Image 1 (cartoon, helix red, strand yellow):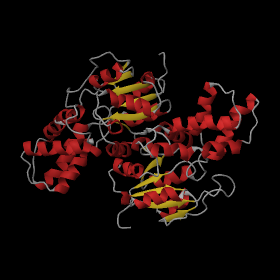
Image 2 (image 1 turned 90 degrees about the vertical axis):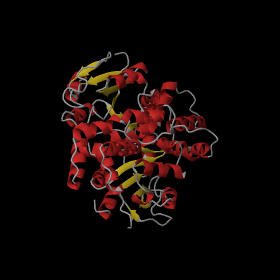
Image 3 (image 1 turned 60 degrees about the horizontal axis):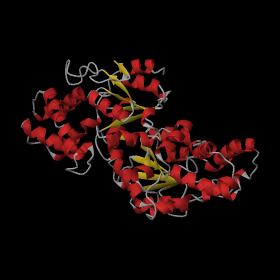
Length: 235
Length: 235
């Protein structure tokens, strides 16, 4: 590589944490005692299904930048209505919305990041807000140097501004940064700006065999775990 | 306390790191081999002496927000001229400016923060830029949950926006945050917004007996070290 990579930027939902199993678990734990019985994975999928559309309102400028927690909350109202859950208290809805702060990392993530930290600056470049990233980091031992991403940039990936703001925060050119994600569209957007890219296969992200087992765009590295990435990067 | 404190926000220059000794050392190490002999502490004081005036240009809106690295660089040019150092290369000036990324922490800081981290969210709320904070954290083992402060807010302390942006990033009310600093004016600005305050005595910050041995404004806690603060906060 012409320019040495100094920083690794990580997508988080799906790439580092298993949102689907975690949200299904959190929703079941909170709603089952209230006599509510649902297909919890379907509930998680439906909630997540509103994600891109909500961010698109911000990306296109139809609404001002709003933290992902707020978008998640609007999407929760839509999802609860769809599943005919109509009697939750405000406190319960607020707490359920914070389920996104209690997601579990895939098992390779904490040891992989610990190795990568020896050689690179590490930051999430996620669409999640700062407080959400901090809670996930505390829960899962994610050793970030800084929390970058959508809230710093005031916009949502894959808008170029989000990637460029992250590189600028570290005083680095895009070429000195590598985006790590389980989603080809995220990596394509980063690569278009000159960043290096690494794809991590998460074939079961959205359920069995419903995730990217391999990238659909050219990438610098394709791996099955962060530990494999650490090995390939000599960390 | 009516509202439990959840996050501690830290001033950095003077409060956590000994900028004067470190800058004098770095300048001496770089310039002495070029045959330059100066009073290095006076050089550090003069460089730091331009600090508030440069930020005031931003605070008053006379210039757009600029990272502290850029202000430091302008102030370096002024300081070099004053000390009649006229022959430094661009590379040398760039490297000397990064001396602010190589400051050493006061000895109580790493162990104090390690204890405080068990009980509180921790973030710098400094006028230093993100990359500078990251370099100081790596050098001194400062276990931040996130890097907040001037660059996130787009303005400089003691403007209210900087403190409020930090609390908002953590989804906390000002009352749930405590500002920790060695400078009474910083604490007064935070307290005016409803934050809790802790003063750390750094009596030798600007040379022997040239620092705040005690606060000049009312504070919630006055301590001589972060370890003493950890003890008082039960961490």
